[in-house]
Image (cartoon, rainbow, N blue to C red; front, side, top):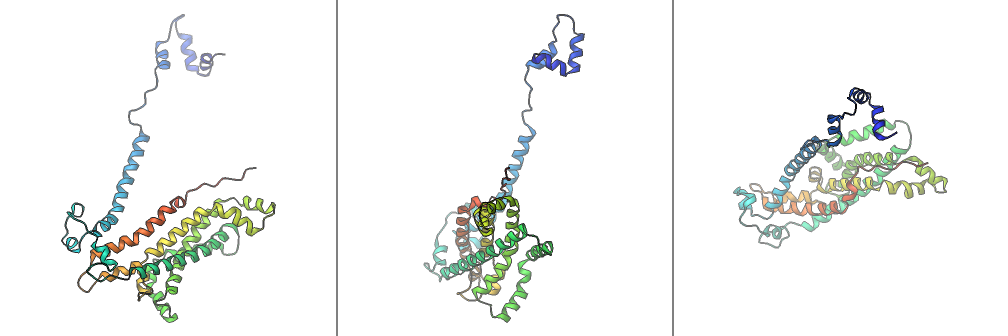
Length: 323
């Protein structure tokens, strides 16, 4: 049976049309419909929707980046120009004097940027390592094991993260005063660990849930211990989620200001965000110097983000177990 006969057999309307057609006659309308290609609209709905979404995302990103761009441009302007509200995007001149002043190489006295940088680095890295270690153990336990009050503990852990950090500043300050942890790196690290553990547990738990349990069980059948199955099979597959949790925890500790400003007092404990307050006086604010220090704070975070950006793509689909 030919293709035309098969099409006629499957289409009753076409069959009746052919039966009523004159002998030897042609069906010009059917022939024309078969020969002419289907014309698509010049602007498909899917294309319009795609470019509409792209335009909305572009506008949203421009609005989000505008404050950061304002800070970066003002870092290269004088404080007089900023207070005079000159046109920021059409400034006639830019200068590096603000950065020289920040590092004490200009006409004005600088601030201890090096000490603040070391404090921020020590506090952020230490709190991130501890938070990820606890989050890794907690996330794996919630994802793999069944125990009493599991859901209650998980919900309670998430609710503790839902409380704004600034709302905890007063009770934390009073408690830390009793314990003698005010103006110490240890006290700030403990606070940041408590802030980052719930989010780390939640994120790492989600990644381990996507890894089939059968992979670890197959490794144990092949002779691995439970610990070896975790480190050699499950951990490598979840490293993207662990890296994402580590980056978010580090950035949270690196940029946090509200609690750090309450818990640190001296140069030995102040972090870079708290160091921004050194540019404020009783009646004036050195906006140019503050913007310059803000740029210095942003640069390490940007470098770290670009280095590990591939791990920040958390929407990974893990393969299933093949039989």
